[in-house]
Length: 280
Image (cartoon, rainbow, N blue to C red; front, side, top):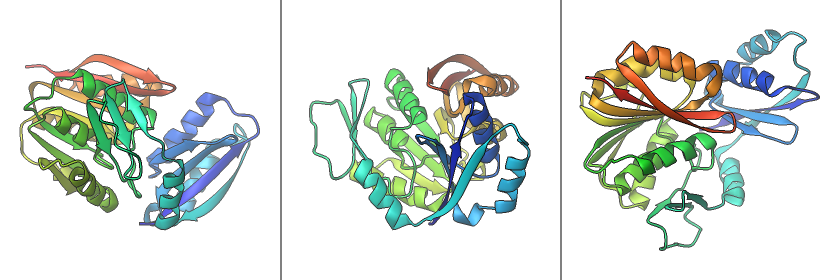
């Protein structure tokens, strides 16, 4: 699958302005953002890229932003070379070691996860994935049935499996991610992770103890009702992929409509992960 990169450079920009622009780009299908020394790069599946929609977003900011941008095609093989050059092992809370296939095994860690990301997102390096993994390490998951939405590489599902989860359903609407989760589960000897390609319509009629959803604010708001419908009473949802302001309050308000009670949240940089509990 090919991706399109839009590389933004700014002369003078406030952090909140970047956040607003990123939120607007997410609304039109951009799903990954990487900071650069002069701004940030935004990525979207090429088949979903609409330059008119991009121009409409940029025009909505008027003269508030001073920027330049370039549009580049990113072929899968080039992307793979790039992440392989820059992928470094990651340690989460001194308990979990995330490495690629070309890194050495480190037996001193309680949980070791081997990830071959290819074009799928989710190596643990992004703040949202890190926070979700921290939550998982703090949460009792033994013998639980888990739903992982927006699974990417399957890294979160693999971690709950290594911590004793009974069954994991991993869902992503990107076929590359769907295949990547299958391959990574095999790399980690995880037989109880089932990868499905789709969105909320792919959620099976199963009673889940724990739901993981690291996506973005707008998709979460759209799918919260679907999550609540399959979450057991006293079950837990862990959300990430959004900002503290204004996203967290929006998600809290929407969750309350479905008896999902806010418990707490974590924050790294501008990104947030939050924990909710389903009331009886």
